[in-house]
Image (cartoon, rainbow, N blue to C red; front, side, top):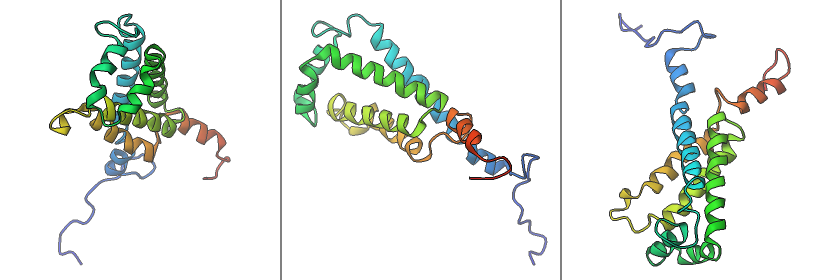
Length: 175
């Protein structure tokens, strides 16, 4: 007996008996998904439409940027590999960011998209922002950490993945 103390700390909605806490938990990753999706789409488009960025040399170019961080990166060999074809690497990163952003935003192959985002962020942290001192000034590490919940959970709501799962589910049954 609780002697007047309430044990039901939340009231169910008419949403299949889900409480507000259950709903909050269910939709918790949606703001992160939208932020990362939009940000990576923007980053990819920004690179593709910036003619100075997609050059091997010159102010603001991918080549010049990579040469400037080469000696301070955690893995100079990775930068050297990219410097063999800076323009190709720039396009690969830009189109990778676009694919990751779109996949994350619409929730298609969402865990794979999030893994791609995590790998892009990891490579940028180890190269571009490695020299940040203190380490938490480098934004790529924060992006890497932000991708991890999406790698683990995917996109369970408002996603093409969820819609495809619902189509595959037998009528009246659960998978």
